[in-house]
Image (cartoon, rainbow, N blue to C red; front, top):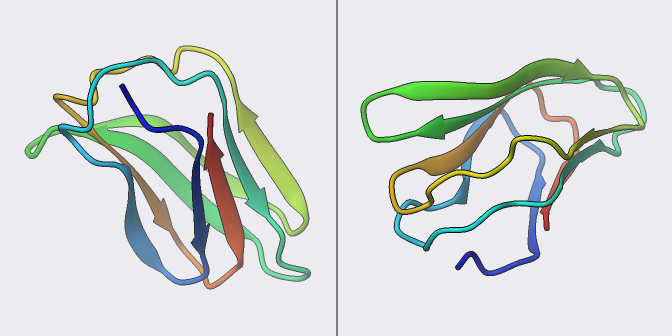
Length: 98
């Protein structure tokens, strides 16, 4: 099973692994991605990665001081896929997975 909740703070242009392949199996009830930066928007790409292929869950722009909430179709095999996020700016975001 995934150890939950998972909290990640990100404030750089980066690829961040949120759930590492092999951490178990289970469903995710909710992912929140909060852009708590006062002025910078952030473009995020949330995706599953099996080591070869990328499967995009969502790719969107989050304006300053806005939170994206994902609550539907979040089940995946963490034994097969990494859950990753790419960020496009140095906006300060927090990702919470429950």
